[in-house]
Structure formats: C-alpha cells, structure tokens
Length: 203
Image 1: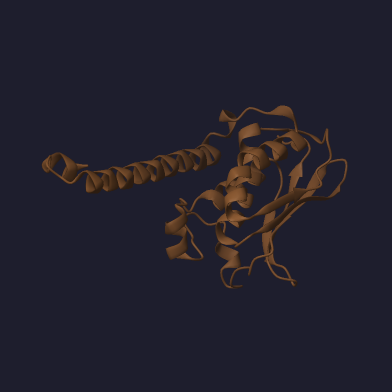
Image 2: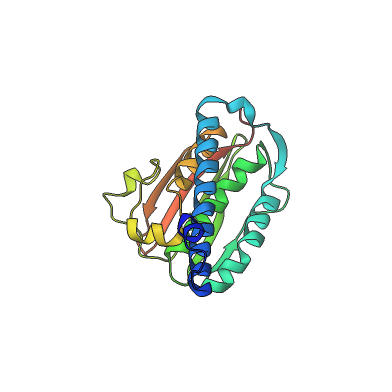
C-alpha cells in the first residue's frame, strides 16, 4: 500500500496486483488474529462460550454447505453418516470449528479428496467420531505435533493455501472443552484419520 501511495503514476495493472496482494495479506492477518483470540479464550475464559442443546446433524450439514463450493472447485467429495436429532449440550461455534477445520484441511491438502465423517459409536455419556480422507497421510514423526500451535507439516504448501497454523490446535481445545479427546493416525489403506470423542453433556 505504501508503494501505491508513493507512486501515483503506477501502471494500472501493477496497481491492481499490489492491491490484491494487500487484500490477501489483510485477510490472512484477520484470520490469524481471530484464531489467536479463540485459542486465548479457550485457555483462560472458557465461561465465554455458552452451552446449548444442539443437533450435531445440523452442524455437520452446515459445515458441508459452507464448504460445498470449495469442494466443487477442487473435486472433493464429502459424505457423512451422522443421524438426525443427535443432540449434544455444547457450544455451536466450537463444535462447528471441529468439523469445519478438519474437513477444510483435507480439502486443502488432498487432491480430489474423498472425506468421510462418521459417528462410529455412542454410549449414554459420549459420542465417538472419525473423520478420514484418502490422501497420503503425513510422516509418522509429525503425528505427535499436528495439534501444536503454528506447527506445519508442509510449510511451503501451508503458506500457499493461506492457513494460520492454528486450526488443529483450535480443534483440540474445542474437543477438550466438550469433555473429549482427539488423536490422528495414518490409515493402512492410505489417508489420514482423526478420531475423537465428545461428551453428550460437558461441564
């Protein structure tokens, strides 16, 4: 932006290129600030997030709807087996972020991704889920670190897709907020799988 201000006679195409780059970077900065704010609130202000009775089927459907255009553009397919009226007492924003961030990562890093969200089992206290893709997985030495803040398996590609490096850390904190835990593993048939639980009623 400073370059544009200092060169009022700049070629129009070059001016537009600078403006587009500035716009992209401001968007990334806004996303970063928002993600850092979310992490800090989950660390220190858990009372900030209210808990309501929510239908997880509706949340997952909303995630798929919001990601449908990007899935179409990248050739990704997303399926799920979440039943209707699967009720949980929790926070909508955080539950949405769990499913959205994991699926969004798969769309970003897997070519023509085939993503499946599954309710694997349930009991009176907890719900158990799996989100898997058909990609190449990630190096085994990276698995213990993927939920750490700002950790990137592929630094170059992460910059290209514009991630903040906080998405999976938010996922982990959101799962813990809902009385669950989460792990990731490479699938024997290929791809990455996230396995996590959520308490039907969290404190």
